[in-house]
Length: 147
Image (cartoon, rainbow, N blue to C red):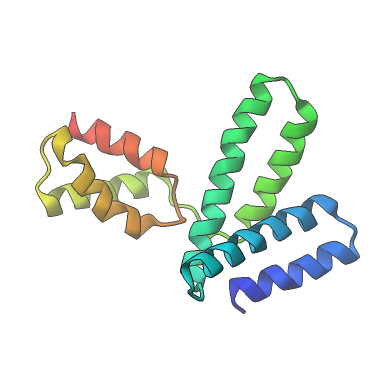
């Protein structure tokens, strides 16, 4: 079953269960997918959909930090639930040590030895980990290993 079909199926289930947070979260993801397809006149495959979902998760994590600063526990709870729903559609996340090994391999591949080579490393690493690790972790690991 493709991710689109899975999202449609789980949207119906959330409507039957009257789970408003799951329903609205899935609707927003499906809307983002549809918008991307219309804007770029393409049919997305699962790998591209994973990229959109990871972007949605990242946006919610950023919002979560702001809600915590503002001491809005109601929004914190809702956003955590949305993240929990979205993460189900992402592939198994890589551990930090797995990401580090990919970063070290990329550094050898491009012959990186200074911060000037960071862009080259990121260009090699990001397609390999798309949707399976946060770009912030990759950025941190690249900086640590270049110093």
